[in-house]
Amino acid sequence: MTDDKVGLVIRDLTVAYGRKRVVHSFSLGPLRRGEVLALLGPNAAGKSTLLRGIAGLGSASGQVRLDGIDLARLSRVERAKRIAYMPQSQPPGIGLPVIEAVVSACSGMLGRQAAMREAYDALERLGADELAMLSLSELSGGQRQMVALAQAIVRRPEVLLLDEPTSALDLKHQIYVMECAAALARERGTIVLAVLHDVPLALRYADSVAMLKDGCLKVHGPAEEIVTPELLADVYGIEARVERCSLGRIQIMVDGTLAR
Image (cartoon, rainbow, N blue to C red; front, side):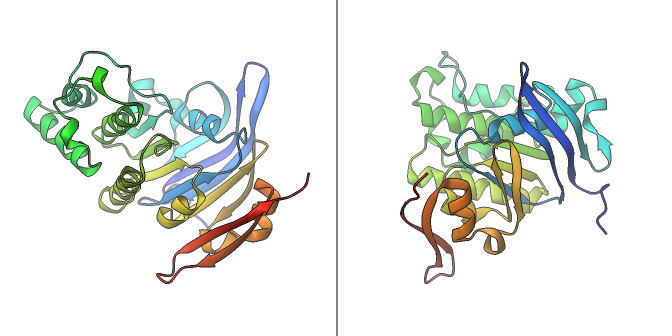
């Protein structure tokens, strides 16, 4: 029997845009402190909409509870202290130094010196400390994506929601970002939920996987138990092999697409 008063629990969460329901009665959890969950699925499966619903954005019904507390009953400020949400869009290219943009994310929470230390530490974790004195207007989309993640990290949230955090990054910085997410979970007990399209990357760093299709939860569990050729065929419409490399990591070999 699970204890719904420990960790993050989602119950019957339905999220809509206008009159269109995108996520249907989604239930999951409890996700324990220190757990990294990868949200996988094809385009338009509802992954990003689900994150917005968990963050308290948009039109949603159902319950999101953290350690037994219904987050909907908290003020927006109190909820924001517990949950940090990094959307797909990056900070605007304004003439503000990166370090100041990151410091501003924890203004009011820490003194100036402590905030500066947190900001530099967050950028260093992401392999982006060389950006500190640059203006946001000088950055590429991928670099602004790392700044957005640093802004989320410095708030030290209990739950970190990442919407495609590696989509605009090169291979090196994809690894930095996922290693950072795993380290935050391990060191601070942060619960991390990340929407990812790179399935092998997700399998390498996530403790568990939730697969979505058509706005519904298809399956949830440890990656090595649930990711099978049959599941990939059903969800993604591909013919693939699931194998392990010489280091014991799960690899997916795509042989082709399946006829519709």
